[in-house]
Length: 92
Image (tube, rainbow, N blue to C red; front, side):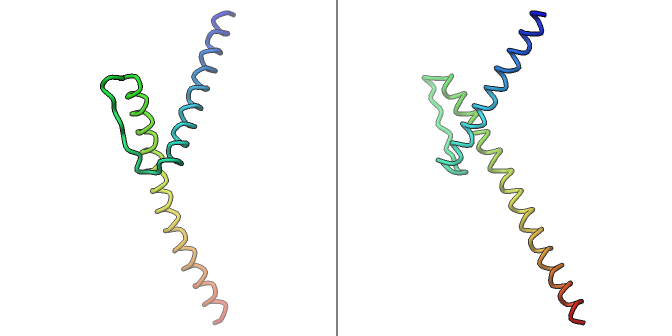
């Protein structure tokens, strides 16, 4: 019983940390853009590790957004081609 409560609390804490991390990545992406510069401080390794994680998150989100943009561009072109084909068939 206590072990189940402990595991539930750990899961809740991990979920909260993941949400805070995602919010920090999205906030940094919004304020700094996709070209977020990594700043490491050898005097403060804990902050540097946090900055590294945020930088990795920003790079991952930027990569996914670029891939989605490319996919949507291809779909947009294909949709335009299909539209032209339908209009051509309708007029014939």
